[in-house]
Structure formats: structure tokens, C-alpha cells
Image (cartoon, rainbow, N blue to C red; front, side, top):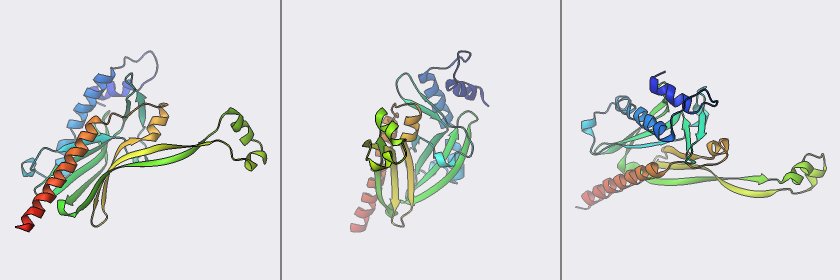
Length: 230
């Protein structure tokens, strides 16, 4: 565990004996930890930075909860109501002249350990869609009386109890190719929101990054089309 990792871990600790850093200090330490992932991404992609045509684009968000591999998920709602968590899902988009080369991992910033690493290479001409998708779900909300009735054998089964409510389960950015391959990036996850009884995800940077990826793909595809029309 690094010295910064100890501060990050204690940020989530409960009890008066822990001296916790502020929300802003936590965000700064996470930013520093994320920057250290970039050389690893280049190595895994067998990519030299000088071979890229523009600055890389980063998106950080919730990790894949199905692939934590025993790593403890820590969640906290800050004083600003922003939901903070570790591990962190990281996606780095690198742009070569002909393709997007992406690196993904779940970063444990306490030990600066990148888990569940994977790489993707999508040629610009093969990308057929890029969308921000909200996955919705539904649930039945029962009041106190309905909860009591619902527990009574037979009686609860004869009545349609509760109020159906809709909620957003996940917010994702998805690139899809003509071969149906997809690169999925989680931007928000309702499971984490439920764990801290509400709150919000910090999405401003992620949305800017998504817009930059979209613009780059459009520019490259438009340039290719213009070249073919000559």
C-alpha cells in the first residue's frame, strides 16, 4: 500500500479515530493515480505515443461489478453529494491515423493495481454507431400497510399491491462496429447510488470526453469519405 493509498483507504473508513482527507483531496489523489495508468496502457497496446495523432481521451466511472475478483468495493457520498468509489473503471482512448486503440481496467488506487485489463482496436471506418445509452429498470414500491399484507399467505397473492416505479439502472457509452463488436464504458450505476441512499455521479468530465471521441470519429470518417469522393 502506498502512502497515498492509505489516505484513499481511510477516506472511506468509519469511526472517529481516522483522520480523513477532504473530498477535494481525495479527487486529487485519484487524479494522480489515474495518470500513472497511461504508460501501462501504451505498453499493453504496443503503442508509442509519437504514433498517435492527438491527445488521448480518458473516461473514469464505476467498475464492472461482476469482475471485482474479490476486491472490496468501497463507496461514499461526499459533502457535495457526489458518489465516490474504489475500484474505478478506467478507459483510455488513443487515436492512431486509422484506428482507435483503447485500454480498459479496474484500478485499485490503494495499491495502484490495474485489474481486469483488456485492449481494443477499432478502425474508424468499421465504427457504425457511438451512443450514450440509459438502461432502465422497474420495481414495485410498497407502503407500510402493503408490506404487511404482502407477507400474509394467500391474501397478498390475491391483490396487486404497490406502485410501479421506473429508474435508470446504468448510463453507458457504447461504440459498435460493423462486425457487432462493442466497447462499453459505464458512466453511472444505480447499484452504487442505492448503497449510499442517493447522490449523484460526477459526469461533467466524462461527457466532455465522450464528445471528444465522437468528434474525432466523425472527423476521421468524414475525411475518409471526402478522400473517396475525389
